[in-house]
Length: 248
Image (tube, rainbow, N blue to C red; front, top):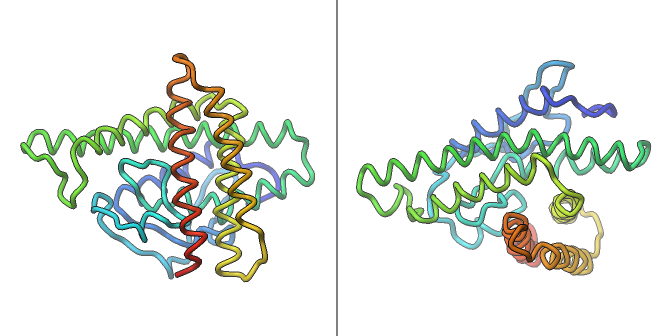
C-alpha cells in the first residue's frame, strides 16, 4: 500500500473481495502488501499459494479458533481474510503512516477504514441471517456443518452491532482495533520471521486497556459498545492461547 492513504472506494473494493472469500470459507492466508495490487480506482489480489477453502459453518476445534486469522465474531467464528489483511498489511501501513503523518491524519484514515469495514460486517450479518432463515424454513436446529441456529442468529446480530459501531467509531474502538492488530502482527512476526518480542506484557497491556474501555461502556446507553469490548476480551484470550502454543 502506498504512503498516501487509499480512498474509500478502493477500500470498499477490497472489502467486497474479502466478503466473497469469507462467505465461501476461502482464505488467502498471505495478504501482505506485495500481494495486494492497488491503483487509483481498482484493487486486485495475487499469489494464492497458501490459500485454502473449507465450510465456514463447520464446528471449530480449539486449534482452529486460537489462530492469528480468527474473526472477532465468537458465535460464528471464521478464519477471515479481513483479519489476515489487517495484521499482514494494515498494521505495518498504519505504523508507517504514524511515522510521517499527524495523529489527526492517522485517526482520520482509521475512521475511514472502519466505515468501509462496516459495510463488510453488514453483508456478513445478512449472510448469517439468511443461513439462519434457511434453517428455520427447513425445520433444522443446526446449519449443515454443525453451527446451532441460535448461534447463527447471535452471530448475525453481532455483525450488525459491529457495523453500527464502525460507522462512527469512538477513540476507544479505534484504540482497541489497533491493539488487537498489533498483537496479531507481533505473534506472526515472532513465529514466522523470528522477531523477538515480549508478548506477555503486550497482552497484559491490551487486556487492561480493553477492560477499562468496557468499564466506561457499562451503562444502558452503551450496550453495543459493552458487547464489543466484552467479545474483544474473549478474542484476546484466544490470541493469547495461540501465542502460548506458537506456530504449531
